Amino acid sequence: MDLSNIMAVSGRPGLFEIKAQTRSGVVATSLIDGKRITTNANAQISVIGDIQVYCIGEEIPLTTVFEKILTYESGAATRLSPKSAAVELEAYFFEILDNYDEERVYPSDIKKIMQWYNLLLSKKLIETPKPKKPKAKKTTTEDKETSED
Image 1 (tube, rainbow, N blue to C red):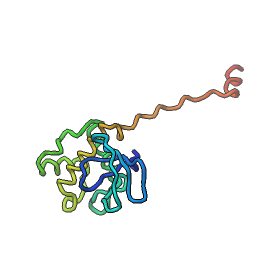
Image 2 (cartoon, helix red, strand yellow):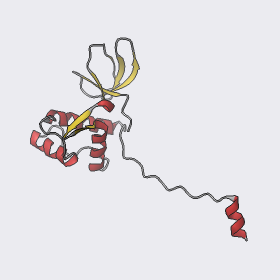
Image 3 (tube, rainbow, N blue to C red):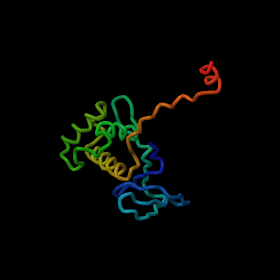
Image 4 (cartoon, helix red, strand yellow):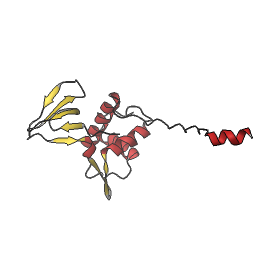
């Protein structure tokens, strides 16, 4: 899952796909409505691939959390609404990531992670990996010669 060109902009809802970098900022397209935006150097931009989630003893990349949600939900949207009560959000997140740091990961963070997951899933930017088919063994000319004898 490569989310290196997807970013969040502080103060703006949703996620954005980076189209180009300028000297003073970034040109991006909203994943929600497709509108183009330009950011300036003062905007707080977070690339999704660089975000980490606080866990006990370590930090886990957000992309790994998305993979865990994808596996937990069997490739579907979250079964719990991001607008649910804080206690429900924390219980849901604990089922997915049992070692997350409850003191540093707030319910608002969980809500945002769930919203982003659902948005990325709806845009098919994250999906369940397809099982790999075993490659058929190619018969070589040596195999043919020995089987004919």
